[in-house]
Length: 144
Image 1 (tube, rainbow, N blue to C red):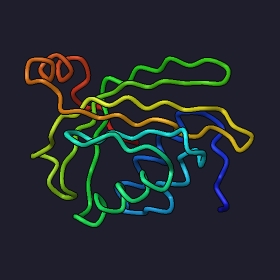
Image 2: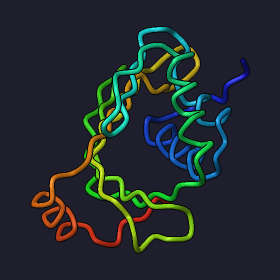
Image 3: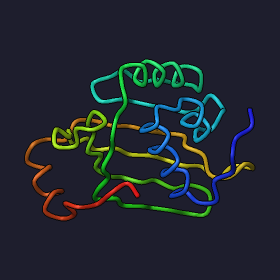
């Protein structure tokens, strides 16, 4: 599989969300590390272990329609080989951003021989009280 190199964790993260918004499974999976020690947990979903299982999970999600994201409250903890980003994803159906649902996410990246790659995406519904706090801090943050 020919995957583009990502020079920074932020570059990989941008590519991840842009691929989801385009509904591009191949581009989405190009962000992921291809070894089997990768994990993805979608809101209310079970733990998906391994590249192929994660790919199938995303295929199912993307087949249900296009999604739109607005990101806020991004916190990055980065070292030389590993990075962890926490953020709030405001997820909506494409074209309907007023109906965005807040989701807290953690994305972890590993520096590989092929650039930065995702090794973990864990997302869960944000509790109502926490959402007001996030909105107050960064109400207009955009993906781009």
